[in-house]
Image (cartoon, rainbow, N blue to C red; front, side, top):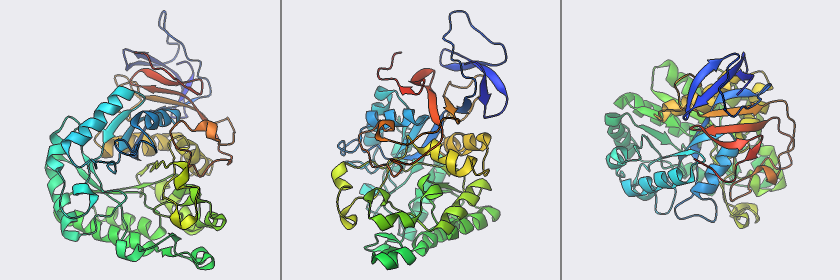
Length: 427
């Protein structure tokens, strides 16, 4: 690669040999090597998503590991953590090893399974956490995402259990009693539309409980898709107290608000719901000042029929892998809140660290060649042509988004070349 801007800063050449970054400097070359003319492209360590729904096994009408990792590569991602809400649920060593094998066969991105906290994600008894941790998948992140681990005793036991192998519990913070029948954010818009509201306190109360539990047992807690100003305040308080908590924000909670629900377009139906403008600004501030550690997509594909229906009947969720970097560019970089080194931190280095995923998050000599080259100068409208998964439930269709992923390199293998997804990968 010639003339890339390392983390958006100094121009440099990068030499990749045998799947590893062999040299970084200026005026570099290798006889017979493929040369990528990369002047003006921002070089980032390959992106890592800590929150992806790949649906396989069991829900292949929505997505498969192959189609989901193709979408990931198109968005600049070289590794994704696969949520456990499959069928069967990923609550045993056998299922997580199956997911790992599917990812290895697909090759577009490394797939790291996330194990369920409770059997069947039912919240009643702990799943086989130790067996999943010691399996070939080496699971270190556990979540019932889609469902809150609402029982305080089970949450405490889970936090205690994962300490022995440096695991982390990733909580979907939603008090189920406070959100029964909820259809959107509770506030002015929900009142005007007559839709049942999802109050901010339903998220904030669970986060408050869980950071205190994490402190009590001395374990690691990760908060999924944080979405309210109050949640940012709680995480900020917990970190100042020295509690081992990390948190993620989604791209859509950095950009979109509950005003979009007025059109009853189910592409905007998601859990947690789109919040007020004040919440969006608070989440941006929290990401900028380090209170929120990472951006994770919560990529949640659904067949068209699950979205092309009345609002109340529609499924929650949005696809987000292909658009994530562009949305972060628009909401955080163009606003001056983050620079490209910060983007590398929140979309690669820190997600890999939280998930204990070796070989990712570093753009340095000797590291595996996981690299994303991004052109921030290309304007464009996001369309279905930008989507490479099995579902098209993106909230950004028809929206102007800056930039484009030009090259994605996964373990030395090119998966996106000159802005085009490579259809057939070669060794």
